[in-house]
Length: 627
Image (cartoon, rainbow, N blue to C red; front, side, top):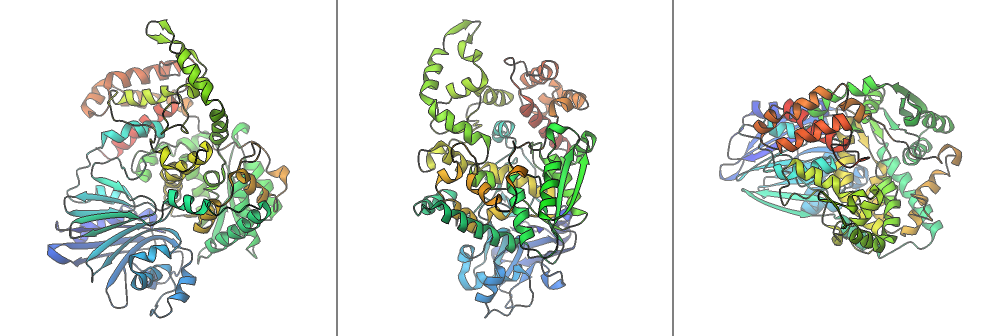
């Protein structure tokens, strides 16, 4: 695991400036660093840099930037190629000097050209420069596990694993892209290809960017829609066969991710996904696997006792840490530094704490991320099954809801939240994104209700089929999974120089999941049915069958208590007018009402804490980076 950065530019950036950019990511790679600058064609200069967290081949032979034997190709790389040993055998005619996966990328490119992307599997962000063709390639893994940003400055390009190196690049002004803020307030993250800055983008998952002599070309080598369409045409009709083959694929995915020259463990929450991954890891190990759990003294939020029971059953070397509210609260100050663009999923806080705990004993930790998206695990998927049945009645309720009640109010506004969410669900492009439109209106009102500020993703008809659950799962794989879940865990683990690996997002597992009939995943209301069935082969049902709790963060309590004055200062009309981003009068009233009444002055019972928290995190980020 590492951090990479570099540029192709006519604006010469010297070695010291590139080193400063690179060193903003020392947490991503504390073990080694490399900075090199080369002369390119037509007055261009090429800079490549990397911070290294040594995982495989700890020797100096794994140093980056790494060059091909003939010096034609240079690579900097963040991530892991899990099939590199198999590829190394296939590429045996290349004169390998190291035992690391970076050199396999070079050999694969020399054999297959840029189509090497079809052969490598893992989590990766790659920058590769070919002196013969004078092309720079940026490549991101299929599902977006590893981040990769780039800044287009005229006919110059700067790239990095995080925004901090770009922000330190000479000439970068950091103009905020206002049009993404409303969606951020609503979604709590900024999805690719957008970033918080103008002219700065995230390379999308499964994409390649080719930059040559000032010209940019982007294409997808792997796409959720195409992968689903192709694989779903070849369904596995036998449940027993699907279970057995999926189990074998998961076992291999876990085994591949246990290859490391450093200590390795797993995150264990006690839920189905993390318990299954831990069970498979223990089954693949001759020693007790190290497992890590965070506990809470608040019983309603605590799953540590269940994780401990699973660990005891599997015979792992288990470490748990009970944390209090103060330990979570103390993480707030560091969020802006390590998430370096606004990111407001509050579960980032316990994610940082469990990463901190694991780093005390291991350098690599496996997790169960991806199980919900690929195997129908979230509660929203069950809600959508009901919403689809009630869609016709919702349309009728919407019509009746237009009855005026005076003072500009309508009967619709008096509906219970769940009824209103279904009644207002009209747009065929956002049918599967259930919520009260009040949240959307509030997010837009922060931005003065400007037109063209979408909060939802208006792309659902681009996904095949008519099943709302499947469409939402595909949408989540495209957006929520890489934009929120994977971003959260990448930054949380990298804060402590810990590598996080996700076996369920193995290419073979993902593509096989598209072959599994949906009724094997969502069976008579049972979410993740087939995945649970595999877990039961290793762990008794009584240790797993319970409602999911998840990490609890007391946002309302914090924002109306110790963060109150800070939140009010962020919503001060004078400050907001000077900042020039938000509707000062609306935001000031919203925050004042939220703090005093708990609902932002909206309908009784509404909870706008997520929008208030998103706003708080944005302003914290804005202040930290001195924008």
